[in-house]
Length: 101
Image (cartoon, rainbow, N blue to C red; front, side, top):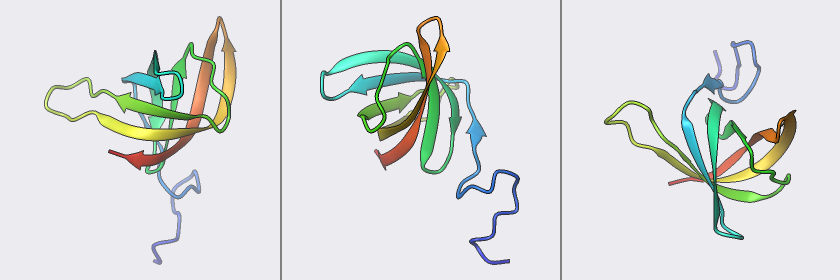
């Protein structure tokens, strides 16, 4: 089967992996830090919930912390592609990881 064939249900380039992990969000334009909770990761993207209100196209720095000891955190430059208000001042933020460090 060719590598471009997607046999899984989502028909995406990368399978989405659901996570429940702390996410530290840094806005490099203001150097302000926010906290969030990871929802899912894929090979080139992520989604998290936070009380920070970000804009589509905005670049952020993310650190996704592993809850188990001995596993390195994921550090990435991130570009916001979607923001969904959840109510109570929280937002689901989705985007593309531009550079994983």
